[in-house]
Length: 457
Length: 130
Image (tube, rainbow over all chains, first blue to last red; front, side, top):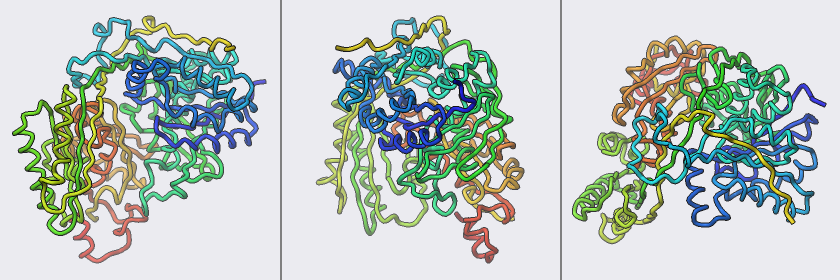
């Protein structure tokens, strides 16, 4: 029987999110006694490429490394209560993630789990250079590095097909983030693929939920100005959606954080450009007539959502080998530390000049100006604040050769013996970089589909 | 009227897409919205990020939810995958905008603002220095 109300819970907003977020969400979904679904969003712009590199190195890897920790606490409860789980934790290996989930269910002594797999987002086989570049990326230089991954942001329909087929869990790779939440709504309510206003409600629900705690006080609290209870235990979000498109957002019961008009407003505009045209693979959302009302504590009603037809093309993110990044850091503290930090920065620049390493570099004086500054350090040089208590000096170097980048980062380490008085606490490391750029590909070139993990012996 | 950092009047959040950043600005008191609309011009916001190579700012007005959305082009030094900056996503940049001085009525300040109470001229001078 189709209930007129459906709940969507979110239990992760990025790869690296709190792994104990899901249980309070699932308990809340169960206690409401309404049909519901749970989704995990763990795939950032670069994550698929990093996963592809992991899979290249080990064919059994390439999916969300925290998969077990994320799912184990709730998989049994969700199976027992008929709450489908949807997640893009497939990364570059949805089949590998699906196999792992089936095995996990067995290890936990649960009934066999029916895992749907969404495929078709990997479009490395397409002539990618022939498609138009996504407008916001026109200025991005990928330095001609080899293509590691190319993935289309799929729409909700393959997930819907898996749910219609009876999936307990649906594993995807790259999918539009809001589509993860929209899919179970389309499945439950039977919304038409051209009912733009309703699809827009589901897309906004997904958009508000897809960053997890960010709806309920994460990236929000500012002591004295915007206080929230128990920031160590922020509740993850839940959307209550009506068949006719009513939407209320809230959070898991018995958790910290707070869902308010202020927190919802911040998340509504998060990563949005033109609010009259928020593009998802399923629908183009017009946010301009939206109103927000706190109807009860931690419950905000979202009205006025409108939809326009979906875009003709799908966004494809292409990840190139971006060379290497090296970072080295070391501290100075106490009297005259500003002058000592600046002298160290000058010496580091001179070292890079002397050693002729093939790197692009930057020096930061953390505590005087770093994250807001530019590569030239203009803000830090103009810093007119009081003498800092301590300063951390950082060198960052990027280039195509690991050896040069590593040598540049190690110049911070060498300051332990060669630096100014009272220098200590060196750390350095070198990591692979991925450069991404997006293009627009016609839907007909991206045939996506869902299938089920074959029964295993 | 009092000159204070925007942080005393509004809150906001930054998000990135490629080399483009958006920052929402949401006044604590809706009465401040028209004054902020006058003062937070695209040109003035562009100046705040000029040192980072920003090339354009577009302001979207969202009066029904008491908000502005600023979209700033080319401000992330190539974006998270290219920048050498510790904060390649630019998530901390909302607070650079919130440091911008604005002139508002004292009644428009956040309740928590130390300048929300009636204070001496000395305090106002302190506010202007911030």
